[in-house]
Amino acid sequence: PDVMVRFLRHQGYDVKYVRNITDIDDKIIKRSRTEGIPAQEVADKYADEYKRDLADLNILDPDVEPRVSTHVPEIIRLVEDLVGKGLAYEVEGDVYYRVKNFQGYGKLSKRNLEEMLDGAGSRIYVDDRKETPLDFALRKAAKPGEPAWDRPWGPGRPRWHIECSAMSSTHLGDTFDIHGGGRDLIFPHHENEIAQSQGAHGHDTFARYWVHNGFIDFNGEKMSKSLGNFFTTREILGLYDAESVRYFLLTVHYRS
Image (cartoon, rainbow, N blue to C red; front, top):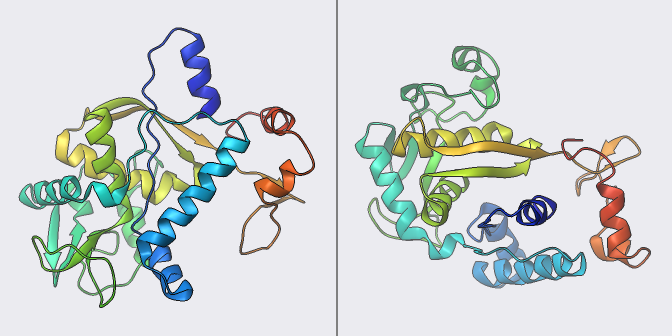
């Protein structure tokens, strides 16, 4: 995104750059229990470390940097809108998106809804309370000790997909130009964002262009924490200057 924003501004475009921070999340809650500190402190701690790494790489600050925790009312309104339109339903404090009622689900990832339901889709997540296996959570009832908001279905918290739809519409409107992210987010995350946002605002809304970046490989494998084959930004910058690292990563197409 940094290179794209710089290039577009260099070409004379007026760019509003929004980069959100997810600070309500299952992994954050789990880490808060491990570290014995509130979930919001965990989120703040790692957000600060992330920003330090970006600054060391000379990455531009966004114009707006929304956080989930400050957009809960907007998220709740979006969920209520989807329920009111028959695109979502509540079960025991959880709210799920009714995928079968959204025409065109799978268009970004080029997947067929019927095939997903008959095949791999049935293995996504087994929950007998859902109408179909592909239905995904917009809101989850909170467990004891978790961050929670009371309205309108009792204590609960927003889920990942709905957060992004609410923040993008709040700061960029119902339709905007470019949506970025890693290629691993195409399905289900970005597919679900489309279903939520277009379900609420219309089929001709949301992102006009999608930009999905590839990953850094090491010995033919994607760098990941689970494989233990990764280097931190700080380790790399201890060996090479930031501009050299940036240039090296830009010598291949962003999708690669």
